[in-house]
Length: 165
Image (cartoon, helix red, strand yellow):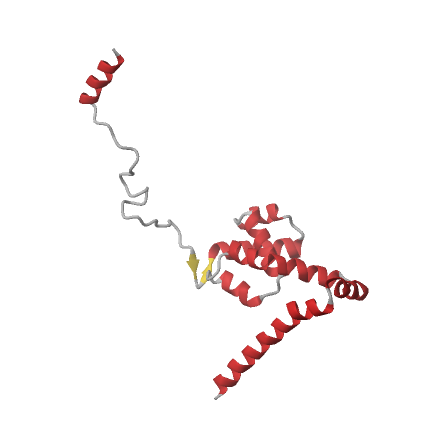
């Protein structure tokens, strides 16, 4: 009886194939998604600016990231990510983030370890730093930290010299 009911109903009702979206995935049928509001204004990514403003409220006014998110229209995770970028003290990266060239979350992931290392280094006493050098070994410290930094300086100095010619 159910089979006959289904077969008779199927002939009367057209069945829609739900496996395919009739409107291109909800994007007007052309596969593109158009935002209602601009994401970049005046050369700056607005979400990154809101996160930066929230991070400044955390740093200067002592707000929690959640409170700062409420004040700025950002969200707490974005503000924490921006705090990590600011703590890295990499002004070039921060500028790239604010201009929308690098996503906040991507930049924060890149510098998270560096920010932790810088914070620990600044908090360490001279004796702590000596003990650290002994623990990992001066040769390892030189090869892993100093030599690559010197090579980077040599490359940039060569580029400056070539540009001057």
